[in-house]
Amino acid sequence: MISTEIKNKVQLLWDRLWAGGLSNPITAIDNISYLIFMKRLEKFHPEVPNKVKWSDYNNLQGIELKLRVEEVFNFIQNDLSAKDEPFAIEMSNARFAIITPSLLEEAIRIIDDIFYLVEEEERQNQHFQDLLGDVYEYLLRATNEAGKNGQFRTPRHIIQMMNELVAPNIDTEDAKICDVTSGSSGFLVGAFQYILKENSDKIILDEENQLEKGLDGKKLTVKKKKQLKENAFFGFDIDATMVRIGMMNMMMHGIEKPHIINLNSISDEYEEYYYEFNKKSFTPEQLLKGEEIKYHDKIFSSLGKEEFSHILANPPFAAKVNSKSISKNLNRIYDIKEGKTQSLQTELLFLERIIYMLKKNGRAAVIIPEGVLFNSGKAYKTAREILLKDCDLEAVISLPSGVFYPYTGVKTSILLFTKMQFDSDIYYTKKVWFYGMDSDGYTLDNSRKKVRNDFPLPEVINQFETRNHKNNPQKDRSQKHFYVDLDVIIENKFDLTYNRYLEIKYVPKNYDPPKDILGKIIELEEIVFKNLSDLNKIIK
Image (cartoon, rainbow, N blue to C red; front, side, top):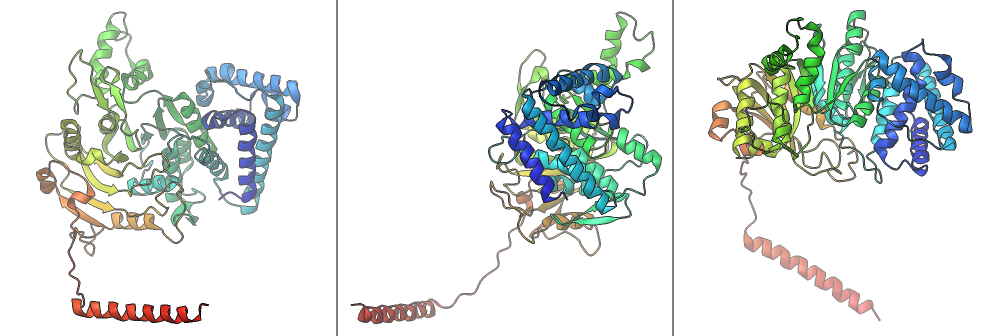
């Protein structure tokens, strides 16, 4: 938890940039990320020349400071990106927008103040604190406030709950955790924090939502720590600016080498990325002129397939794309005709892609709009059938309307599933657990204020973890949570909505006889008439 003093400094930085002309919040946070990377450049790369070290120029002023920062920016874009520094590579086409010397001076001074306060707080607490990550999260949160039209971000407490449910880990050397539309990398940071918590001796309770947080990660071996910080997290995003913001968010939380790739993960760009990535393993014969195209086409259907052990995602809602821009490997939900242009729903394509990307026994937690669960269209029913066949659909958790205010009031659910066999002919799902959330602990309006003493998330997690316990049979469909067998779901045309299976029990209520009720009304009327008469007597 960051102090009020740090929060005030963050707000001051926003105010200065806002007044200085950086009114677009995404542009502002992007440029703040550049400055943070510049400040930490020496930590990431101790061998860089003195002239590009923050300590060598942060006290400069005016045009001299402006020219030096431009020089540092160019160094990162050219020299550092050539050394395969991930963030520097993503900065190669970026533009530094803080061009007023006085604004640059103020921004650098405030960033120095924030880092000083963070270091002081860390020294006082004497244990691992994710304070820099919290500061960056607070910066990102500021983009959502009134007057700042921020990106659509999944609430942090929902991310935390989803990580508790899917339980990501790095138990194997090839474990990879992914978000197919990573944005600010909230899901990946959440997975990192969950793994740290599971491997910590010291655990504290997050007072905001009553969920646990780890403080030290001491149970991790040196090898596992390296794996966690360098090789465990992967993301894809179509927006280059959000890729940089997401990478900085991860780096501020301690993930030293985030793998966030600027591409559309439901297009052929995904397979092409893996083709280029794996090219070094191809034989010279395979790469002979004229043969490479044949080899490319031959292996295309397996590129990037069954790559990830865990996927957490909140793909775009209700967006439509041109079928010609979609990967040829996404061909099971939609019957795409050769040469024919169609308009396709992205939420279905992302669901198909996630199943494609998951390893066997890999697990996913995905937020989808409610329409995916009940729409009677052929593509929607096919998507649900594939999900039930290829995967063990463990849970459908119905979120309350309003969770994504102020962006949208669309009703959503979380799908939790384990990949069993790609393109299966049989149903691996035997029954599905449903849970209906009435609240997420916040008001379900545009203000989204914390409701005092309302902590529903631990209850969801507890009920999920104990759902198969002998003392928790989950058969009564009139409750918040229950199981539905596969045959019932098939009978209902693969409908997966919580309300479709919730049984409303009629509880008869006894009322007084009408004559008694009328008598009580007359008594009340007589009292009112008497009081009015008394009042009338004393009014002159």
